[in-house]
Length: 509
Image (cartoon, rainbow, N blue to C red; front, side, top):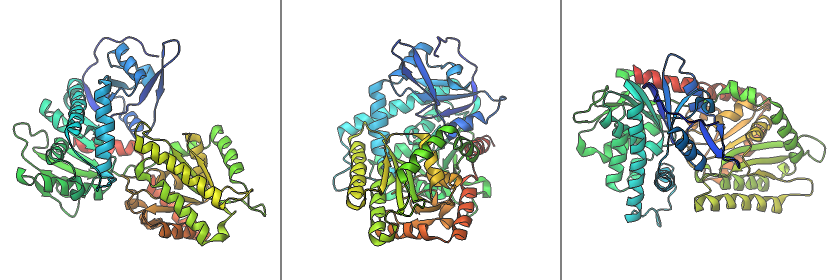
């Protein structure tokens, strides 16, 4: 419950900044606010800091309920709502927020880093784009100013993702004493694609990022891409790269460029590091065995059904949001091709596909969600029988049902066009009770860690993906079990708390 707050807290020694915070609010009919706490790596990570550190999370108000909470508390949320965490929520003007979040972060930067543009028609950068870019700058400036206000002398600040790419540079100008880190949860575009952006915008993004002492990425592939972008775009700014074969040599791989009179603790050097976020195995195993998951498993088993001779059907499971990068439509077409190429699998396998709506305020995402449904319906109409529905598609978000599907999976299909990591590829092998095989796109960040034990595919190749699905279904049991064991071990090698603390310790070193 939100209560009125007034007194300002002591400066923080550890700060996290992200678009979405650990709590969101909805307004009840009686005018009171209901707080709902979220989960994920940042929530787990911040809880791992310990009681000796003063920590604060800075985030944006996302909706009307959040903005009302900001009004009532002056942005300093009640710890009773946040699980005891100090949270500063920013009440950014809704129009500024929408332009920054929807038009720049999600409709421009996301498209660039995931290489999603149809370049004969898009992008086109004119006056409207410049107006929206100004909103993105205002949104980032609000975060930088709030962090500067909240931070103690020499505090460590961990800024998250492409929404806040300008914050490190802005914050460096305000508070050169701070230790600033930025982590990218997405891929990073190769230089030739990144340069679709207007030259000045590309430069501002890179200089904003290089305001940090440390830049974190999910794989070295994405870190290398950032380096090449910086070298290409900032060639005339005196930037140099020190890129030893051993990333641990001389403190890590780094970029150096002149920062004027505010060099920061790293003296003009920005270190690039990789922290491959893993699955929280302990949490997943505990959560997956609660009664609500058991109920969902029973319902799914009924939907999946049995073969004509009464045996359990095999399952190919995918769980995604309907983001354009997830490649759900080609996954469905690959499954259809499997059934055409290998009719022996008809009535013996079901594709359990969860495609939860994402960013439905954007027309292109609504159209993609509709196409997913259309293709699933087409496969079922073409190949289904009275006793067998080839595709079991769910589009309503249900975490317990996702965990139930993980436990039932014989094959996990993870075939994104491009993905920073893809935690589903790590979570399913941890929970599968059938020693699942993993069919994995080589364009997922998870490929760097899981590729040796997965069946790797080109995400654009429907025939090859269909062949990989067949191979996954026919792997000898001993081979499947060994692969699954190694996949689960790799998937949990860097759980969220350790992932967060590693970055914090490196920033403070």
